[in-house]
Length: 196
Ligand SMILES: [Mg+2]
Image 1 (cartoon, rainbow, N blue to C red):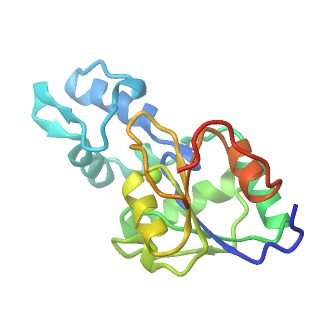
Image 2 (tube, protein in one colour):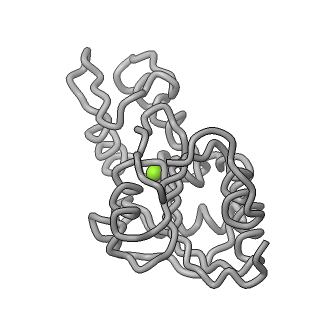
């Protein structure tokens, strides 16, 4: 265990710190009468055939029409708040990097504060590739972001969600829980399952 990790962690929000999929499914039911559960959304570009919409279009619609309903009051991912505190205590600098639209950043910062999430900096203008933000480790649930990061020389931790594809790279790790993140980054223990 390192008391002075002295590394910068880039931490995603949706699917990493908060559980946004249950709210998305709620919206699909209210607005389109679709009966979908988060477990069924097994592809990052999932298509809801009966209404002719892809998931990214639904998310864009929610950001535009009902941002507060979509983003306020979301449940945190289990263990995330305690893990950020432990990582900070271990010497990691924590930067929040989300691709949510910039006009929703105040809502996101409010949510982070309400949840007691520990972080040092909120990146307001995240480039399309998160790998362009200067950091040592990216923690994210989207395989595309993690792939960009490991190719740029960072360590990448990909949260295992139904839509997260495997990444074949020796700096990429798949994590199930925030306890797995701590095992890797603070306690230096092996995470069960694959590394890379
Ligand atoms: Mg995400």
